[in-house]
Image (cartoon, rainbow, N blue to C red; front, side, top):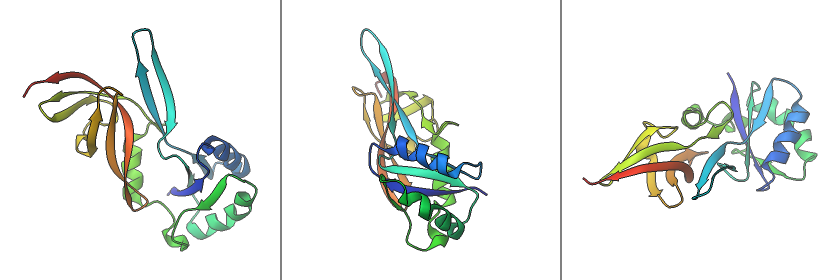
Length: 177
């Protein structure tokens, strides 16, 4: 079973930390990543896509190691990086891994490259219907739609807290009730 652990890092340095950790791990036993959101910007001349961190300041590590083994393994590695602040958890190695429910929920949104792509849908009255993309079947997580910025604010559980995250959504039509 693969466990997920999360590092709190300096915001904006997620890519550097991932490269550092993957170099230090050097094996297939542990891989670092940070979930990204694909934002789509459209104007009359072009369509531009941009990737942003889903959780700025957090880097995930997927590993086969258990809590105690992982903590021992990363203690030296984290001291070598000036951008890693700390490994998240309550200090008890048995509870530092992301729980399976949160992990499964996040994996439902992410593709194989840990990216949340664009969803497409329509609005009928005050209800949102998603026809394709990662929000398909998860309309209940949508808390707010900003049609101008082409994004939806969703609510999800992350490390025991409820967080709001913006994801890309294209509303192609607004139908009256």
